[in-house]
Length: 115
Image 1 (cartoon, rainbow, N blue to C red):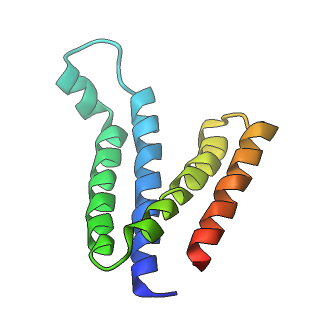
Image 2: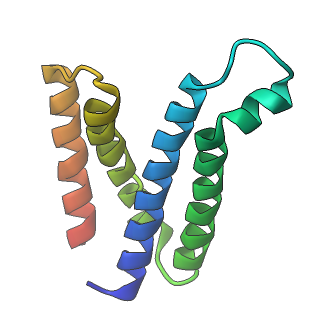
Image 3: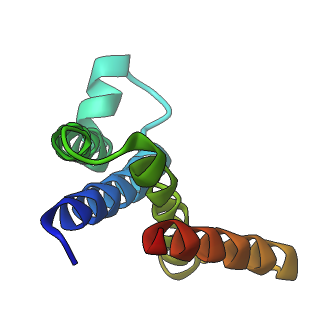
C-alpha cells in the first residue's frame, strides 16, 4: 500500500473518531447555562472538532498528489467506521436495509481502491 493511501485512510479514520466524539459530546451538553460554558463542559465535542481539524490537514496533504476522483470515494470508509462505532458505543440498531447499504458502500470502496 502506498504512502498516499495510508494518509487518506488515516485522515478518514481520524475523521470518523472525530464524528463519534461530536456525537458523544453532543449528548453531554448541559441543558442550562451559557452556550460557551455548555460547549467547554462537553469536552468530547471540542476533541471531536480538533480531530476533524487534524483529519482535514491530512486530507489536504493527500490531495497534493492523489487524484480527487480516486481519493474522494474513499471518504465513504468513514461511514463504515461510524456505522460500526454507533452500534457498539451508542447501541444504535442495525437493520437489514442499513446492512445492505453498508455492503454497497464497501463494494464501492473496493472497486475504487483497485482502480
